[in-house]
Length: 168
Ligand SMILES: [Ca+2]
Ligand SMILES: [Ca+2]
Image (tube, rainbow, N blue to C red):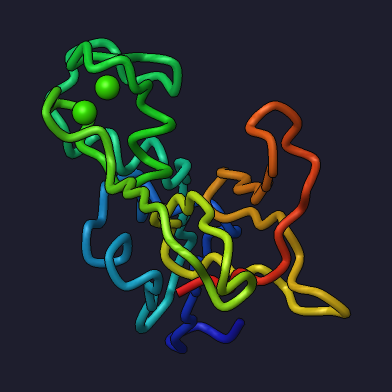
């Protein structure tokens, strides 16, 4: 590039990741980290820009007081729900009273208006989509979490794939 001109760099994290840190000429630059962009202006010499990334899970767990139990298998609050399940179900990994927003009900449905069924309602990570083809697909992956919808008429074999569900 010509001396005295400007050059803008855009930093974009891959799906499932966020920007952890951007260093400009070896110095942490929180503005570039937040905006995902940095412009060198009036360039007359060499500069450097580097970025590091972390998973969305790692970023999420860093906002909770879980001590050293930051791994996906950790259960800092001792509620029996590991950190990954709390992440997947919108729980709080540092609060044993919050295991995620999971609700169940027994009712008839649009699918079967006579026989009651047990329905489990769970949250999914924002942006999770169950692609629609011939049927709605029963698996979706977002932020490193794979959600699978299974159904059962016996509560023994969960091989009755439900396809009448849509993400909300
Ligand atoms: Ca837990
Ligand atoms: Ca919890």
